[in-house]
Image (cartoon, rainbow, N blue to C red; front, side):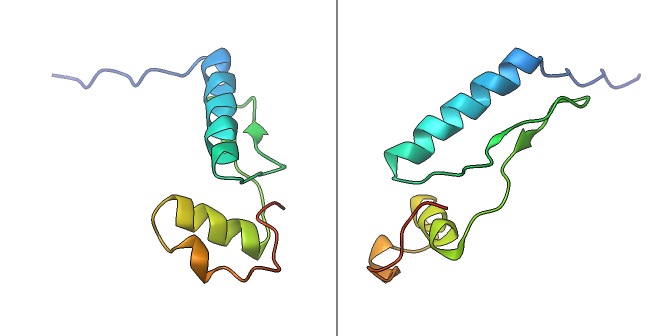
Length: 78
C-alpha cells in the first residue's frame, strides 16, 4: 500500500499564512521586515533575518523568555 502524496499548498494559502503571521507578530509588537513568501514548489514562508532585540521579543512571545529580560533601550523591531 503506497502513501498518499502530500498536498501542495496553494500560493494564496501561503500568502494568507504570511498575513496571519504578520498580524500575530504585530500583536506582540514584533516586525519581521523580510517576512514574505517565495514562489518555489512548494511555496515557502520566508522569515528572513532579524536583529537580536527582535529575536528576543520573538522568543518571549513564544514563551522562551520573558519580555522583562530584554534591555529597555533596545527596539523590538528590526
